Image (cartoon, rainbow, N blue to C red):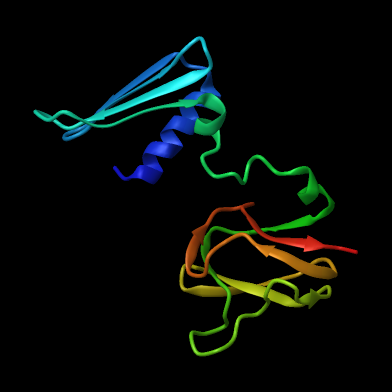
Length: 156
């Protein structure tokens, strides 16, 4: 079990409202407790070893370890372009070509922004709006989920 899966488990427990969850597998034992003071305690232990990781954090942080969920007020004027499918995000049409768009690129409706590969098919993701790319939210060659934010666009 990697750290990403553990973070997702913490998010799930924080959102569910459960007070305690225990998970035991072959080599890992995890207990997540949500205290009355809005804190989540996380303990991971390997058999016959001292605790590997012990961490206390507010439930808000556990619910969003990436600051993506806490969108600043300044980002509210921007439009978010989200992934229409699950797959692997690519900023270039091929490794030897330049990226489709950079921060600051003016785009118009129908411009190709990226490619998402799903089941060996490369799907071009086109812009549905006109504006300027303000931020690229996903790293090249990263897996993306359905409805995951990919770009922030300033429509003005």
